[in-house]
Image 1 (spheres, rainbow, N blue to C red):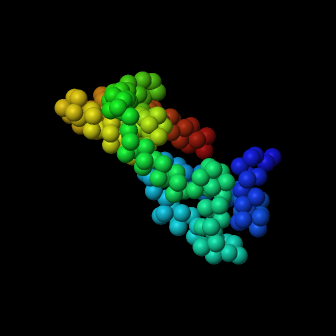
Image 2: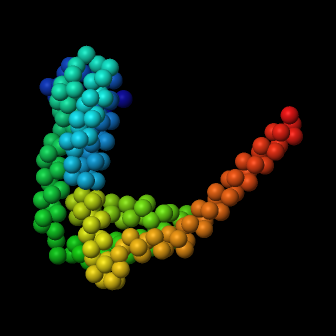
Image 3: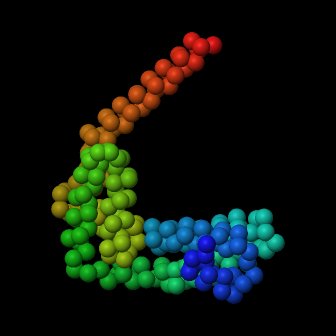
Length: 198
């Protein structure tokens, strides 16, 4: 089954020479690079690494692989990698007046995310809140996290990281330790059963 993005990729200059498998690989790489641009606003390192990996077992070099990935990315996202990066940076430089209020609200959800069943560690809750804010404001996840940390510290007089780790220690760590203990007990019980049959 072909989706519109795959068809668009096939119609690019590079796509006309690519096999179905190469297009699938290039699409996957384009998605990974898009995720990195959304996270950090950068793509050059990933593009270079993936172009080398893409070309490794093919009859084209890494430079050609990079061109194929770029063309596929543009077909997939209707903009180049650099246009996406620049759009995120421009949004960061022109934040709406409500940005700081939204950043504080997102930062303050982190404690609830950690506590609510199933509990989760701080880094996952922080990432979720940062991703939510980044999508709302059209900025990178790193910029969103930085803004959340800044406004949280101003509002509460303590670092968001320290606060999150305290909540994690109180709510997530005991649950995680109980899960680990239960797994160990189950594994031990399973080994004992196997030995008794042997």
